[in-house]
Amino acid sequence: MSRKLLKELLPPWLARNFTGLFYGWYGNYSDWELARKKCSGYDSKEILEKVKKSSLRVKEGLAAFERDSIAFKDPEYNYSLLTAIMWIAVMNHGKLKILDFGGSLGSTYFQHKLFFDSLPHLQWYIVEQPDFIIEGQKNFSDERLMFSCSIDDCIKENNIDIILLSSVLPYIEKPYELLESIKALRFEYILFDKMPLIHGSDKITVQKVNPAIYKASYPCWFFNSTRFLDFMKKDYDLIFEFNNSDRANIQSEFKGFLFRIKD
Image (cartoon, rainbow, N blue to C red):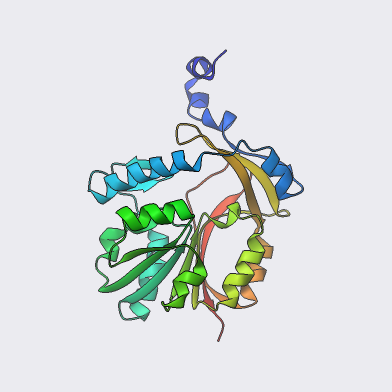
């Protein structure tokens, strides 16, 4: 029986959650490599083209914002994330330089551009995969939105106020090593968004993406909330935390955090 036919036969209450039967987060792997071997991988060129197409629609005013390669017609704002960014901008008298690590072709920037346009001196730098950087520099870069191949390249000539990691740390093989290197650079603020947290030990899963978005599966971390917070609080003070609307098919919660470096 095909999945399409199965969905048609399901009662309405179950059909609404149909994708959760086949797509989501699965398994509990002892190491990253084992999880990676269970993944089909993905064609980054295909994903890039989908993201590019939707992002251009947003840039041209034909869509409100893009998320996970999907263009959305109506505006939707992450007010908690926006509050953190705008609060820092106020503290800096309207001057703000943001490093958006893993920021695609400007998903967060364009989603909230209505508000960011009110800042007289905003510069938004995205660090991404090489193919995204090439595309970003070609079709999306301007005097406020820029693209860099690495954090080191970005900070050579820019005094960054805040580094943003939005739904990116779970897809890093060694996330705490990355965080150590980021903390060593002593950014004044570190802002996390869409962090998947659990109460048990750190967990490596395989995320299966709905092919309606794009065909992909890859390893993904869920972090023990206490370990993560204790790690960050060694060098940074927690300013505030907030809840995200994201949900998973395993017991967890998605949260955001704003940290400021200790005096």
